[in-house]
Image 1 (cartoon, rainbow, N blue to C red):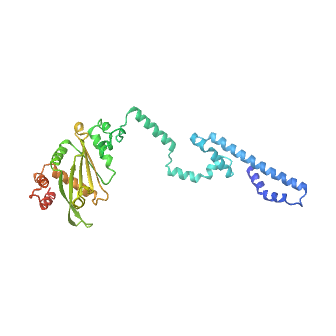
Image 2: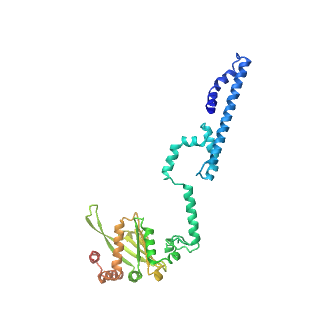
Image 3: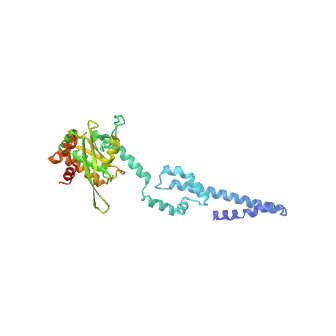
Length: 332
């Protein structure tokens, strides 16, 4: 009622202002108008002060609201309430009930500040008790190589303390969300069989069967294979279309690059491989996987006919033929 009275008095103010400039009014009339004007101003000030005090008191009593947020936004909320002619926080909350519920819904009813504090507390606990190994950190003081090493993907020294099966799982998880990623874990025997021949025969051709949208066979695309022993624990294998290699030579851009990491070879009997089929390389992930499979079949030495073709290609032997290569590629 008090606020309604103030508002009704305020509505009369334009009329009062006009009365002030009408010389036909008697002094008593002017005095009456002045009193009404003063009463309206006083009523407005009292209403504002009362509303502000009520909101301030309710701020102190409000439960479940973060005190830091209240202190930060109290003045702004009080000012907003005054502008809207609202006397307490409940009225302000009711006015914006729909907006508040919408935000709560979007946030899933989560107290963001509580969640952040919980996360920070958990992080500090993990750092203090050493219960969690950060497998992706990297020593900022470590020498930066011109190529990626295993330390660029996981913290080698921390991973080295884990069981072998856990390392394999971590490596798989590290790349499984990338649809163009290639990755594998290889034991020492498998790796040594391949790299022994790769060191002697670093170049080769692999035919990749191509088909149209209707899965009709359209021949083969020849892929040039290059092995590169770039570091003590790092080996690269690059696949480039033969047409691209003939055109640009050593500057040709490979569309599949494999990297073999030997850091855990001695103590874990494990070599980690990762690679990527370039998005603009013209190959699907399935085609890239087929190349990796055939690379293993030709270089592991288990099939003498396939290894003979690798040797003949590197020696420039006249015995090497594309027909023979395609035949062996399609032979299981």
